[in-house]
Image 1: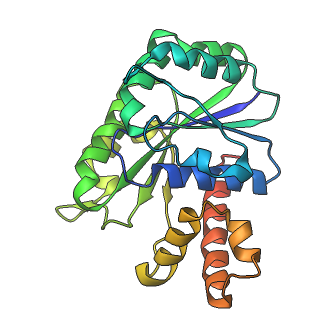
Image 2: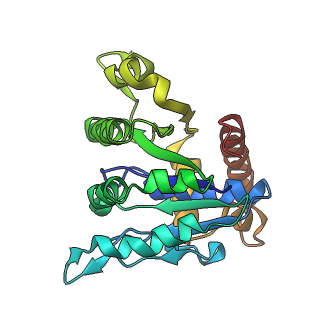
Length: 242
C-alpha cells in the first residue's frame, strides 16, 4: 500500500508549492520513499528542486489542458511501490481539470482497490486571499466527500480570521470539520528574518538540509532555518502523515 498526497488549491500564490516541497522533505526525513509529480502547467515550482527527482507532467496541448495527459499520472499512482509516499503538486490553473479527471475516471476508487491511501492537502491563507482559499477548500471537500483532507493554515499573508472568528469557528469547519484529517498551523516568525530566509532558500531551490548544512549559509540563518524545520517536522509527525 502506498500513501498518495494531492496538493490541491484553486487559488495561486498562497504557498501551495511550498507545502509540497516541505512535505516531500519531511517524508524523506522520516525515512520514507518519496515519489513526486508536478502537474502545474504554469509554475512548476516543485519540479525545480532537482534534489527530489520530480517528474514534471506536461498537461498542456495547443494552449489548453488535455485531461488525457493525466492518464500517465494515474498509471504511476496505481503502480506506486509498497510503503512509498507519492506527492502530487497541482497548479491553480489545473485545479478544476484535475478534479474533474479524478471524478470522471473514478481515480479514488481505483486507488482504493489497490490498497492505496489518499490524502488531499488544501491551503487556507489569511489576508485578501482568505475567501478564495476557503472556496477552493470547499470545492475539494464537497467534490470528494470520502477522502480525508489535511488543511494547512498559512498565516504569512495575514491572520486567518473573519470578523474576529478563527478557522474553527468558520462555517466550513462547523459543517465539514469531521472530514479534516488534521489542521496544520504553519509556523509564523519575523517576516524580515525567517520569512526572508525561506524566501531565499526556495528561490535557490534548496532543501532545508542543504540550507542548514551549507558552508556558505550564515550562522544566524542556519539557526532560524533549523528551528523552523523542526517545527514543520513536528507538525507532519503529529498529523499522522507518516
